[in-house]
Length: 526
Image 1 (cartoon, rainbow, N blue to C red):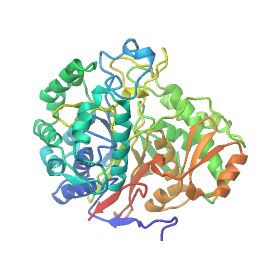
Image 2 (image 1 turned 120 degrees about the horizontal axis):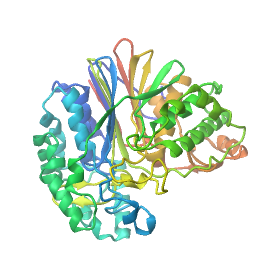
Image 3 (image 1 turned 90 degrees about the vertical axis):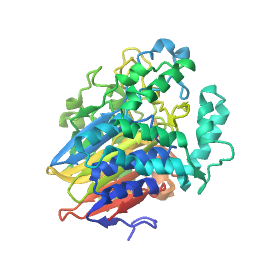
């Protein structure tokens, strides 16, 4: 039975499973499994479909990262893009990075990420993986409830901005006669034809063909700095995943420029802090919050593109460093004196098949629809990841042409003594490492199944001594946290606490999955 109020139960299956935040995308991935594809094929098809059925959080013009368990080994893919050659501090108005428009646009890496994952691990033809997404784009689909709410919010925000760069966004996502509400049908021929071009070219058209040319020309004509040459120069990077141990398990993340190291540092601090046996206690919550603050302070000081700046990953993940951070955890709330986290907008998916392959994949346009810039006639909405650069000269994450920014999106994976347990993730900007820590604690410290681990009420650190908690934690815990110096805001809306998915594989090969109750999530399995 559910440990917390929920109508959801964990889902069990053996042959295959896909978990994500939008039901039609989960079904798209399942259809690929049933057509003979493996978990990697299913994950790619789900990711492509999500650009159509949940454009409120990702798109063709975004980034992605993946952790893939295949043939007894965990592989990491960093498919995030860099600042274009023409983007520097000199072109920023008043030295500030805007949220919307052309300036925060970095090179989109998602399309090449799909192609690279398929090229290394895929089983079905690449074009086959696009069929569900193309169908929904061309023929339309009814909006799911949470996506509709986020879509309507974006319409209001973009109207208030009154930026000419957003005109095409309205043509595509808010055309005459369309109002985003649950069940409203939306279609985009531009999306459909663009996905067909990407499918037919193995992704090359996006970076070196007509789509790249269209992006470069529109940017040059409307005040942007990205050019077709920036797209042509982009490559994904296969990386070695990083890990920390917690209660006999290995928790894996993508190395910087992603912020997954934040979750690993927090777990390292918590490993020897003797958390209470009961989950919802003021001492347990206090220790978790203090650990994540300290981890964020380290991440904000060091995380950057390791091709341009040295990141001391080995030191940050050392037992000695964990101990030094642990020594700073006190009995009352501290102010870590680091910059405040920001907002996000991301999709996460997990996939597994009956042959042992498992995928943890995360994809994003950031801050909802991203920059708001859409390339005319294509449906390509561009992200605004450049907003996460640090604008202080000399900082490891300082803006520089050809450099990837500090990146919030992080897929997670869990193993035990080198054997796979499975993929997990909690999307949502700077909530993500905080969500990873809470899900892992719920699983390994408090013995919850995947659905319980996602149902459980969450907290999040905002800045300084300020935190938010979900109302499900109860008023007594909020008061007790306040007595320890935390400035507590009880949040009635669940949207800011992230959206997660989990698939674990048992030693008998049975898959068990949980999906996020705070969104439109679904597990599709057989």
